[in-house]
Image (cartoon, rainbow, N blue to C red):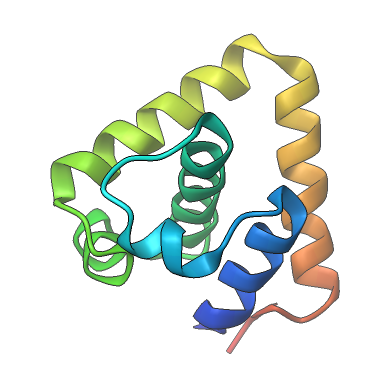
Length: 102
């Protein structure tokens, strides 16, 4: 799957009104920043990236990526509104050809 990483990051950051540089470089952050980072990692995972690849892209440890993905998965399981929002957002990225099948 061909992935336009910068475009995905820009869309996530635009949606949550956060700075893309902060998502990748800030060691901590506000809840909104962390949510944007978690969603960015989740989308990368959905497009076939491994935890190690996501860690390299997101400038994090692999264990941080694993924790982020678990947090997002649990939130999707327990919060239908969040799950629908995330799936709708992911589908809109696919329709805009941000995530393109190769």
